[in-house]
Image (cartoon, rainbow, N blue to C red; front, top):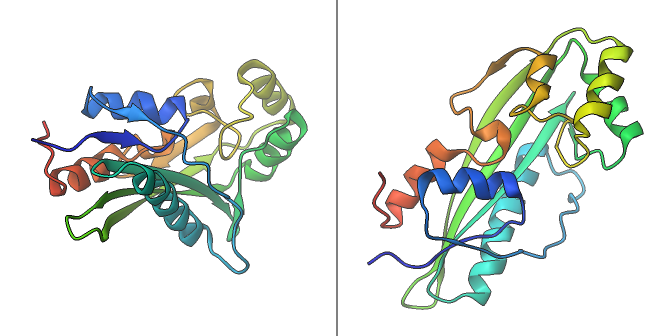
Length: 196
């Protein structure tokens, strides 16, 4: 019998994605500090936060298998986060116009072993989004219509944001939405879950 499965996230996007793979899981907020460490690269930040989320919840739920995930967008070697405001979203999209933005989406699976040690497996997907040359009018119209204030990079590819791109270079289209299901399926099979 498989252990209880918990998603360490409050993201509705990750919850909806995980429901594509499994129907029986709980959602628990990880409550961690997501501040980047000094000198930490975007990929290192994504990996660390995904692990930290999974471990924080696994530590409070003995016997459960816990999934943590984090996504960090990178432009010119610097992390760009969720905008949080209309002005910041417009600023991010102006900076991304005609450019390539790399998204590092990490997923970690943590569970406590019988000897009380913690086992953590991690995978990272790299997706490149190539933006069209965008006018400021297009950007403002997009931000006002979709309000992508809670999305890394200031767009929602599963919505109208797809119209902002020339192309997406990826091995897993679900990664850009926030949870790389191909990598996660591999990690869950390794943890004893039967998929499909």
